[in-house]
Image (cartoon, rainbow, N blue to C red):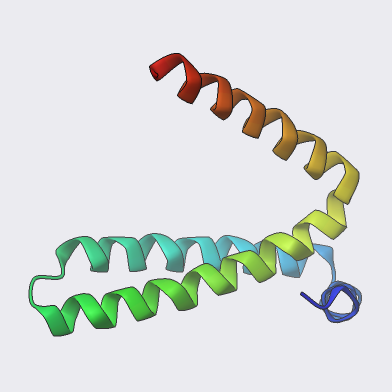
Length: 94
């Protein structure tokens, strides 16, 4: 992911606009998940998966911008914390 482009987007559009855009992208992701859940035939599933992939990409791009806005070190700390917790939960289920 090109961090320079992400930083330029934040600088160009501003913190509030990009956070709100992130909210919109997350909402579109939720809609795509629901579309995938309702898909019945093979063609509908194929289209739903493609739409889901697109919305995931949009969310990742916006979350990477949000990460820049709030501080990458802070987000990375939380990711590590939550991944360790997930690991412990999974190990407890073995």
